[in-house]
Image 1 (cartoon, one colour):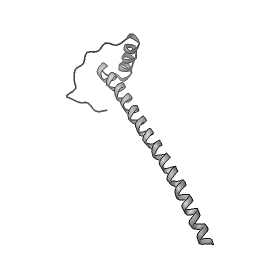
Image 2 (tube, rainbow, N blue to C red):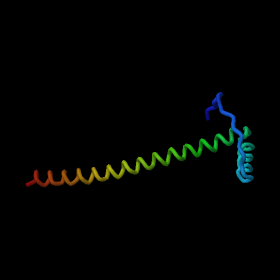
Image 3 (spheres, rainbow, N blue to C red):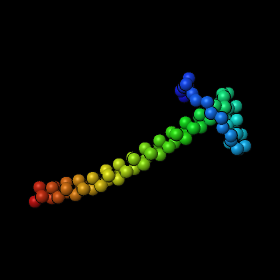
Image 4 (cartoon, rainbow, N blue to C red):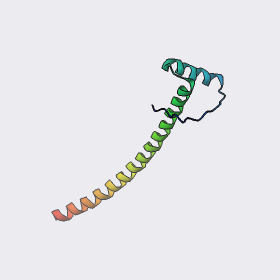
Length: 84
């Protein structure tokens, strides 16, 4: 985890359940509230990036399957022609 010495200050209000969660995280990690909140935001940010990557890979896989099917049909016709 990187620390930015030019971090922005922010005043936030949290509902009790989120405050309890962040407090537990802070205690578990022996860190600050800011670090616990930043960790949660980073984790959410990484999950969002991973979801976008997974979506792009799925689209790429669909294109690869279509290309493979088209190429396979061409290769089959070529083999049949060469055998005859």
